[in-house]
Length: 184
Image 1 (cartoon, rainbow, N blue to C red):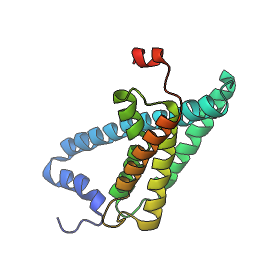
Image 2 (image 1 turned 30 degrees about the vertical axis):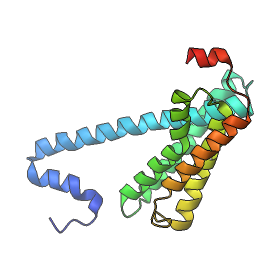
Image 3 (image 1 turned 135 degrees about the vertical axis):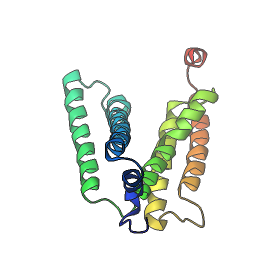
């Protein structure tokens, strides 16, 4: 099928060519349902991370429930608007947008998860510093060099810097309380 106008259409067009119309419809709707389920879960997680984990925990810990709910609606609306805009103006190959997003999530959350699970000295200060530097490094390198930073994808230096920052900050700040370490 060399006449495919965009490579993102390869799977839908191939499905329509191979299967009868009714079965192709079921297959494509199944793929769409899985994608929508993933998107809504990512939206809930991202909104929660921004509002509850960052804003309500570190910037305004005494935020009232009503204000927290309004902020959640606002952040969700902004995120949906960003996603809607990106669907109206998609990149030539959607995989690049997907890879960029997954790289950003990896640069942000990998070390807090790994060190939080397997290193007793890990603390919230190291996690926050790692999340900030990993994310900013990834975005800056990707913006400046695209997906080729000295023959490396920007996720590689972002992960290295995030890990180093996590360890340095965690060792330079107070250890978690003993009851937290024993509990987890």
